[in-house]
Length: 320
Image 1 (cartoon, rainbow, N blue to C red):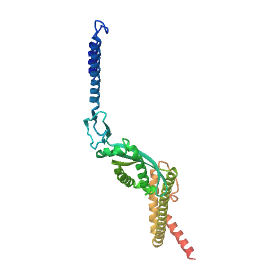
Image 2 (cartoon, rainbow, N blue to C red):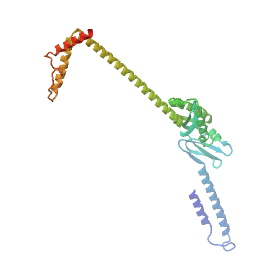
Image 3 (cartoon, helix red, strand yellow):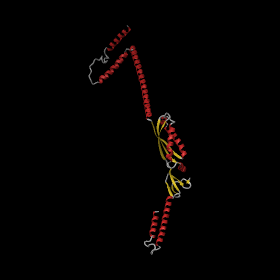
């Protein structure tokens, strides 16, 4: 287009004569100059119109986009134009291009649970327009359709679903809550020809008072479990003491019966005690000089006779 304008200007400059005045020797020079100027202006206007028409009669649709066309005479066309180079009538028609790729929309809202606990929930939605309904979307919602409908729908559906669950169920049944929100949003967004590919809960937080109450409950449960194990340990220790006492009582009773029936039992115990004491004294590096009777090491003397005599005197004393 610039080249055509340049050529027209050059033709215009060449057609204007460099001399001659009206009514003088160059009497017809003024008429020829006016005619040449008119021709040049016509060519210039034609070139401009041609360039404008050529520039505005085509448009390009990028990948992942679709176009709808508005006509000044008939209104919106029913046809949806795909990717690539497309044609339209300049001034009478102009296109509107939509991005049909998946895009995210995030919303965070404060709502109440079934047990009247305040919950802050964040929802992320992946959405895109229905490619076959772009004409309807433009006529009713415009190009910023997602800003018009999604925030209100997400807010309403999230609050409606959270109100069906208790605060504890929002944590233990998070996948079910997310599925319910997705089902509600998908159903309602279809009325506006908006397709949802995924719905997810990105944030879930409770009020500080509820968080402190949950923490206190967990601490109380841990203390109760600890107390239960302490009680079990005390019961086991008690049972051990009782069993040990019974064993010692039975052992003393058996030893008493053995001493009463067989005096040689005490000699056997003295021999065992003397052997243990002798091992200790032999392994010690010190020199010990003590009475063998005090160390229970006198096994060859009259210690046994003295012990039996003493036991006999005690028995007679008990019988008197």
